[in-house]
Length: 164
Image (cartoon, rainbow, N blue to C red):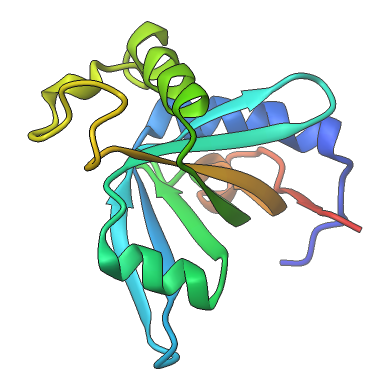
């Protein structure tokens, strides 16, 4: 099924809505050995009408750092039991500065559930300046939103966007 590309203003709000409903995604990176590695992560997304940005509160493990040093791209795939799926292909950048870490910690703390949560529930994360706490900033270059109703023949629209 090939769908025409839409503009970001059409796709981003639908993507954020679905991603924030599903909450958890499989995130894949690729290391210097050319092998992918997947993990489950919990991004939060911001759409301001012009720019879509994602943020992941995560531990800066040696493996994640090595993978993103090799290739600064991540593929995020959300899936729900009703067959709703959405994908974000992104450039990922570590944000180790204190200002960003505090801001994203607060963003997760203050967001409504199910996206919002207290980061201090994660073992080792007592405050945003802990060495075990880091932030990944996500800049999407491709989005896909696929409602499960479309798959089941009950209507819906496949939305896709790719940066120029």
